[in-house]
Length: 77
Image (tube, rainbow, N blue to C red; front, side, top):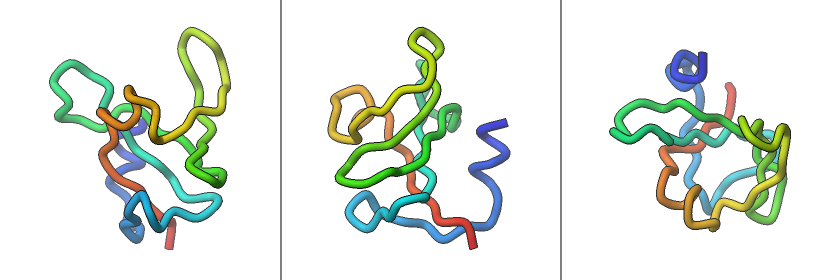
């Protein structure tokens, strides 16, 4: 699951230091307490992820929804 993936050992990466292939994690539930959405960082603030309503899409980290629900970035060791 996404929450399990978020718990594996990886290097924490800030938004400003993301590189292509890094994972980006979000908490989109009402409580915002558990990570439940993940994407793969592309470049220039864009990431690819699966949307339940639109399929696989590219979004931008600065979009209001993803800016509000951002939890962390990670680079697999």
